[in-house]
Length: 165
Image (cartoon, rainbow, N blue to C red):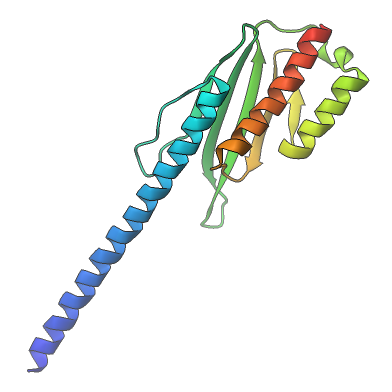
């Protein structure tokens, strides 16, 4: 009788472990589906291209051309934090169709005000002659409204700079 209990316990543990793994994978799929829908909605609203992620650890990226003068990319990536964990970062980039000369000289008070607004939301905003970007923004965005808001802020800043040039 003792062997039967032992085998039943092992079978129960194996079945419960299998169900737990299945449930975790199921939850990951639901989360990925919702995230894909949010990124797709944001990409559609912004006029960018997005290919839904199909793998559990797939890379999220949307990109495209805004108007005739700007190209835009948004992507997320994950890296090891060196302590056994991982951190996900968001990156935003808006590129000018042609490099602007001495963009720092174009920073009027109006543009500086917009730059401050963008920097308060995204942090680490860098303006150069060929692009505006914000990289290594900690955290992964799963809400379409926030993705759209962040990209639109960069686009508005870029359009202010272009019209000043």
